[in-house]
Amino acid sequence: MDEDVPSRDPEKKGDDPEEALAAAAAAARCSSPWVILPAIPKVIQDEEKHLVPGTDLSLQFADPPRSTMLAVSQRIQPNPSQSNFIIPYVVDVLPSGRLLLYTTHDTVYNGAYYICDAHTRVATRLPPSIENPIWPQRSVGFIENPRLRGHHLVAQLYPPYTTQHKTLVYYSTLSGKWDVKQLASSPKHQRWRCNGGVLAHDGKLWWADLPYGFLTCDPFADDVHLRYVALPEGCVMVGVDTIDSDWRKNLDKHRFAKVSEGKLRYVQIHGLPDEPMVSMWTLVDPEGPAWQLEYGVRLEEIWGDDSYKEAGLTPGKVPSIALIDPNNHGVLYFLLGGLLFAVDMRASTNRILHCEEFLLGDGLEVWDEYNNSRFVYAWDLPTTLLRLEPSSGTLLASIPLPNSALSLK
Image (cartoon, rainbow, N blue to C red; front, side):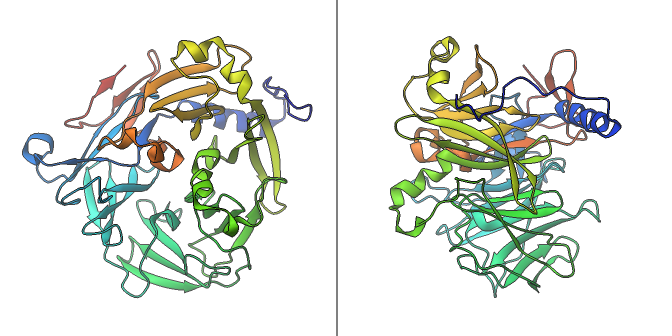
């Protein structure tokens, strides 16, 4: 490990009251139930057998690292086709128990957005945005309204691919229609592709472009100011537009940004091909921006761990980053050869915590291009939907969920 990488030993907490409150909040988060949700659901054809009348979807919950399976009605996704990529796709998930789903029809460009409620298992279709088509899906943000509980916003910076955005196109569940806000301020930047998706964090939306960083704003503000937050020093890339498309595909495998323990984290596999290393940074001050390096671990150390071979994993092959444990930023999940495995990045031995087959809703897990962070979510669930049984660590349904596993071990 490099000398400038912090120790893996947990930091000791002092007696400061604010630190005590932060520790209590962290402990509460650690007890929050969460599941691993593949981004591609299964399409149900025999609805009478698998769906309760009046519902559009079903969920079969499972404890991590097993996948929680989402299935949707063929009314939502007609005529699915793997060969033509006519498949549904989960754009994002929220801790309110809602998820944003995009379904395709004749082509991937001809589809519809649905807000799905895991409590009622009902999918509500959004009207089309005629003047400003909402595409591509990865540039679409989904966020809870912090001022009006139960309401949500779907938003996209417009135009999607540009060096300076001008407007915010959004749909509010409160108004039930699409609208446009002119940005009060917007920085010039590299041509934005938003290949890292959009995150909802700290009451704001964060559009991630993995070579550069984030564009962020409060979409609920009357005057929307868009800000640029660069990646950690040494991570920002130059000349990306000249790089071949095959290399760009690896961005989803080797660069990743998500929220864990209430903080924005950035993970990168770098040092390829000679000395590949996995490093994580935490955004501690978006105004700077200031990033804190949490850890850096050489893949050689992980490959050499006895637990790696015991899990049936192949040393020497670079895995894809999949997700971060939302309750423990020291645990990363990776994908390799159709297997999803968890690694304790701060341990010195027995690093592999879990290893399971990764399943997608329509059998696409055998395709290598689906083995990356684009197609899997760590979904924090509300206590109104699921709770964690303290004695066994098992997820239990708090409400009846037909066709779902009510207690899974």
